[in-house]
Image (cartoon, rainbow, N blue to C red):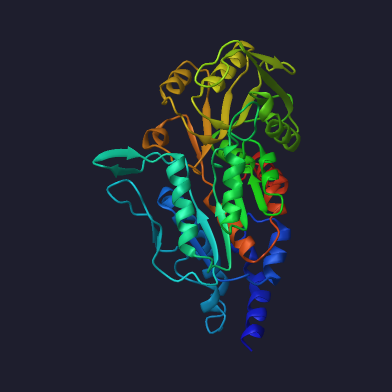
Length: 418
């Protein structure tokens, strides 16, 4: 009887699909109308990801709250809707700097989603009286501690790691370590079923774990929506706008955007001095441009991350020299390892007009206050991914948001609210 009530409950969810899944692809709506969760949902947002985890939790609570309001007496509600999906967990440290993972509630049989931001350097801990900022290595160890605390009792373990740990050490070009591949294999050996990341530096690193789930998601839709909400006079066509790749590694991102928006595409390639090594890599001598003229056009520079920002700003200056109109820099992860002063100066000089990054990693208060900064919130997108996977559904349509991009662009051209 209980199973029958659950089937009726989820079949009737379609009555609220327009409200709950406003941005979900049609294929996902159809799936969620008919599917049942694989197991009760729980989200373990580590300290590094508390703020993002809370936003994701709030969205899922809202999704499911509105889904069950029509059936308050259904026996299935208690197993589906909760006021909070966050797990009470922690990683306290001893005075020596050692730590342990603790989960303060039962997770037996739960579909667990562990969220971690390995780039959150704002967190600190005491090491024999000295204050240390947490590094990616520290956050990765905490992730393993929480997995170990689960003790194999969960129904399924999924890791959401927006910035993939050691993703820039993804291939071997000499006698050196393969950190990213080793980390993925270690997580799988610990019982992780799926690893979800965003804009992996090189998605081919998933070949290290070919029998396990690995998804890398690009926030192209959120970038476009953030840009269109901020600038009301954009002309989105090949005569007035271009997509630019700052190097050969980001070409795929620029090609995708250009194809979706019917724009021209250009790229730079880095000419390096292989006779010298500076900070562990060969220094860039110059950026050479390949593509049609950018004169008088708005350009969007796309990359996976802004680290020091030197390459991005150099590309922006070269585009200005080629008489580009407005320059928008969009990167999934804004690390800004050398601070914001260079970007402030470039904005004041008119070199760039906006910088777009996501809230997938830690953002400083100073960054959020910058007049040129556009914050692209990914929490609702993550909530949709988690909700779909919890129903054991395919996220293929979520990974390729062409329909949503075209829809928001059409609204923009028609003067509608986005």
